[in-house]
Structures are given as structure tokens and as C-alpha cells.
Image (cartoon, rainbow, N blue to C red):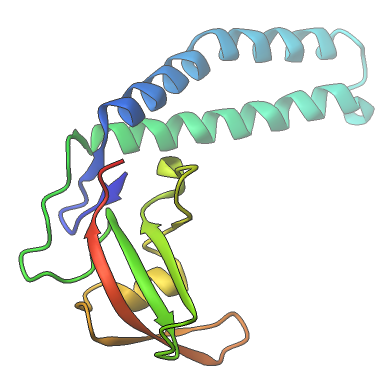
Length: 166
């Protein structure tokens, strides 16, 4: 999955089908199950001290949040490959190889994409992560800087950037 500046999320057909199936399950059978859990817990009596009821309501809230997230994501989704960056710059949907502090012996390769698109064959970093925001827009051979969680800056050199072919 990749996001472009037009707020379009590009998905492979497989990712789209998987997310659509999750949404259908959460909107149908999962809602029925959680409603039954809440009803059963409600029958146990005093709701103020009913741990089962509160746990079921919390689960319902998380489930409904995921339904909203998936609905929004799929409304803005396009199936296919994201168009390559016109100027050759790093963009979401690319597999990027970087060298830390310009040291070409200390490298890392990752997919710049949303966590829903995480792949077992390559590590995934979100475009909104510190590293992701640091490398977006930079071209191969350029240095990029990003902020570490401790507030310090780190620099990397972009060695390679190519569209993910999953």
C-alpha cells in the first residue's frame, strides 16, 4: 500500500481483497458476536462492577474504530501500481536502500509503505515515520536527515530507490 499526495492509497489486488474481507467480517459476523457478548454481560447484573461488560464494550470500540479506518482507506484506494515518481525521488511504495552516515557498509533496505502492506520479505517503514518523512522527496545519491526519538539528528544517503513489485 502506498499513499500519494492526492490522498489516494494504492493497493495490490491481494491487499485490497484482504482488507475488504476484514471489513466485511468486522461489519457483519464480528458485530453480531460482540453484541451478543455485551448482552450476556449485561444480564449478569450491576454494570458498574461488571468486568466482562466493560471488556466487551472496549472491544466493540476498537472494532468500530477499525471499521472506520478500513472504510476510509478503501474509499480512497486504487488497485494497481502507484505511478513512479516523475522526478525519480523517493516516494511511498518504493523499496529504498540507505547507508547510515554515508557509510556504505552500514546499509538497510526497506519498503516505504503503510503497515497494512507490511511484507515478510522486506522490512516496512511508514511514510509518516521519522525515517520515512526524512527520505521522501530525496533522490538516489542525496543525503537526507531525520530526527531520532531522543531528539538528535541522523543522516542517511539514498543508495537505491525503486517501485515495490511485491
